[in-house]
Image (cartoon, rainbow, N blue to C red; front, side, top):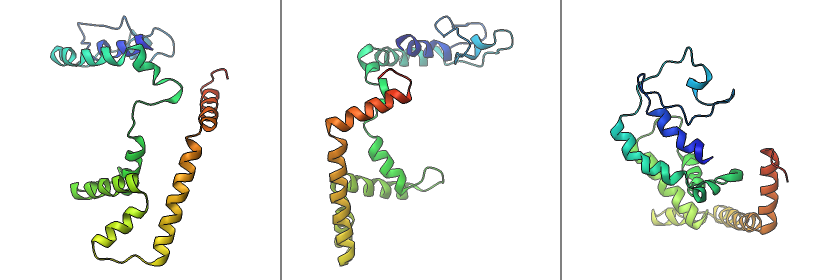
Length: 174
């Protein structure tokens, strides 16, 4: 995997007179268009050398074994996936919205992420809107359910089950 990460930067920095595909995989299912079809492939303009020199240290860091080991078996480097999901549930990425709408979605998502459903009731109270009995009850139930399921998902048993399932889906031996 280290070699694959290191192959990406020279691959996108190539030009017609400076071919650098020696690090790209040379297999029938390769992602490298040049190695797939040597006769017909035409290089587009690659990244300028100045850009390559700037991002090269970042690629070196990303290709280290300890960094790549965190990405195996479906693990991710992005600790913000949950909060991002909450934001995009409130504000779709598929349609254009203005900056204020995105900011409000972020505020709402952060409040929910930190405090749960009760955060909307607190927001209403600050705006002078009184939440009804059923709104308060439903928020309370949702927060209890969220905490209950989070504790189940955080258990060692559930983590091991997810690891086995993920490995099975990816074709690894269990």
